[in-house]
Image (tube, rainbow over all chains, first blue to last red; front, side, top):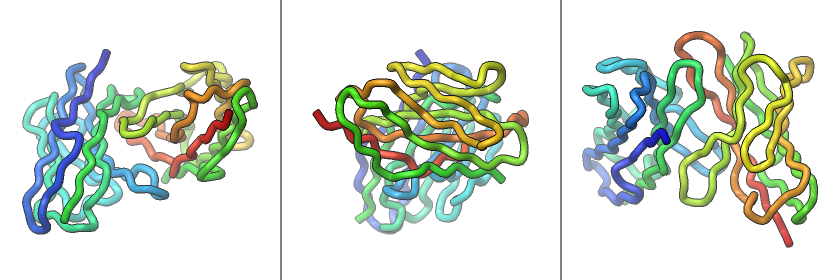
Length: 111
Length: 114
């Protein structure tokens, strides 16, 4: 089975901290994605990547950055965490044209 | 630009009743269409997808969906609901270009009562 692993299920950080969310996939997928999920808003795309060292902004990139130094790893970075970034963060990977495989999510609380 | 509209943020059915979750999409190019399910505190799991070919698509757990181009719809159905079907369901669309992202609907919570 394809696995997408997110390093933390629950995370609590303080306002202003730099936060790293890690995601690793084991099926050699080209594409990786970061979404945030909020009640009533569904999933919104933050950033995605089609190749190593390549990144594209999604619909809500403000306040976030990403890093993809290796094909299997895609990191989401909150440069200075704020309370409005409290959310569930979902990582996914895919082959081009295929469906996504999701990780279990990281529930981030910023206090 | 693509968009997805899921009618009803919550749908309630009795165990054994028909499940119908509605999804309409907007896309300027022929779409790929997906349904995902999310159980509490978990990621999303693919239920089924339409890419090409037969417009009636069968998925896991007895679910199926029909692509109707004229109605721009991709409704999800199951003949008989089980308690274990209670979850949140997301419809998603992507275009068929080489590099494409999924656009999700806002989700429909399915509640199943005994």
